Length: 109
Length: 115
Image (tube, rainbow over all chains, first blue to last red; front, side, top):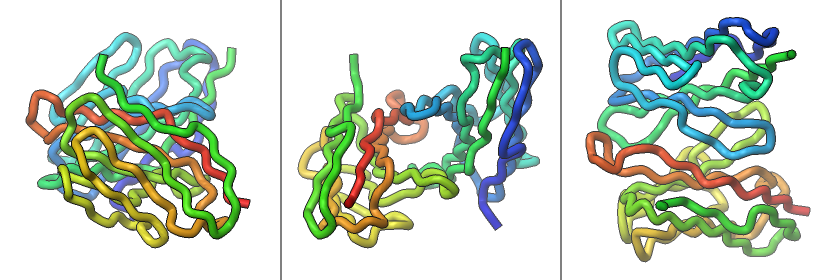
């Protein structure tokens, strides 16, 4: 069983739709990152959170440490949001990330 | 501004050759990591370092080596390149959790093709 499970693996949306990507993990963590990777591009850290909720523009990330679950929401999705989104918990007492396999999002105009 | 840079961006090499990929960061991060990214596998950890002269094997370390002689650099060496090592390689760095300079930063990647 993978230590990090993301769902869905692939997601297609129309511009303007509300998007939710879910992440469940089985290990103890000190923080969790949401990463974004555009096709052929580099990897950018969108959020790092260890509790509660963070918001940046149209992006919202939440985490429930007790339930070992995090979600990434995109409000009013746009074609430029098309990318792979990767959940990456930071394992407790290490400085290593554990990566989900990613969710490929395509937003059509 | 602080940054993390990888070079080269693209590399084609022949089977059996030794290849070194460079990673340089100016964040003053203690921790540096090398990952490879392949379709169907996501990011997998090759080697990592928690500081100068410290190196550790990750989950896919066979055929790779690293050395850490200063804070800024963690070069990745493929001892004898194999076609199975064709991949995109990412370097990352971070400070320690709860430290002011904590925050994972990724390089822009090196696309390596072994022919």
